[in-house]
Length: 148
Image (cartoon, one colour):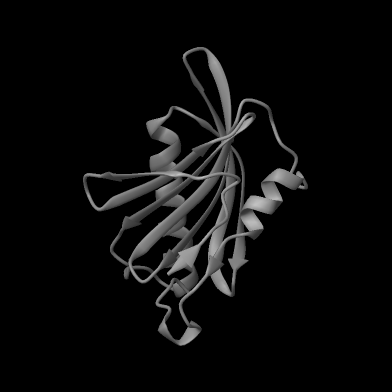
């Protein structure tokens, strides 16, 4: 369905609720991909409203669970598929963590891939962009069922 290049060999963990997590801890950052089976939303006045509401709900669930603060969010295209890029920070054990995420929905699977860092990163950061840009959708476009 998709692939991404980690800077090292990630550890795979399956979680309850059809969630699979791949994680690699580097020296300065942690790299994570989460893939979860999700139902495609269908209620809303327009396709873009459905997409935006779905992405906003997913982001809110994640940030609220960590008592974090959203830093930015923007709609993006990932290999021609609508997605969202966002960043937030949160505190765990008195350490501020910055998360830089991209999220895409493909064939009832939400894929959230991100970097966690103790230091803020600029949007043009090479490490961040190398990781984000290594994500590729591997199924043919005609077989993609995503959010319009």
